[in-house]
Image (cartoon, rainbow, N blue to C red; front, side, top):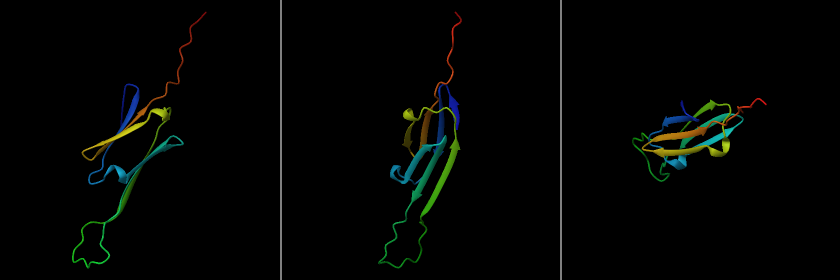
Length: 96
C-alpha cells in the first residue's frame, strides 16, 4: 500500500486466481479484497492424489477521504492493483 500524488494504491499478489475469483468492495471507509477459488473435483472419479483445494483469502484496509466514484482496479500477471483517489477536503480561502 502506497500513496503517490493524489491517490492511494493497493497492490496485491494473487497468483492462480482469475478476475472472476476476486471481489472488491469499499464501504464505511473500508476496502475489502476477497479472493475465493473453488476446486473442480469430479464427483464421478476416485482421486488417488489431489493437491488442489478450495480456499478463500481476504484483506481489509481502512482509508479516509477516498473519492469512491473514481476507484478502479486492474489485474495483470497475478498482481491486483486498486487505485483509490484521495478526495480533496481542504479549500483555500482568500482574505478580503
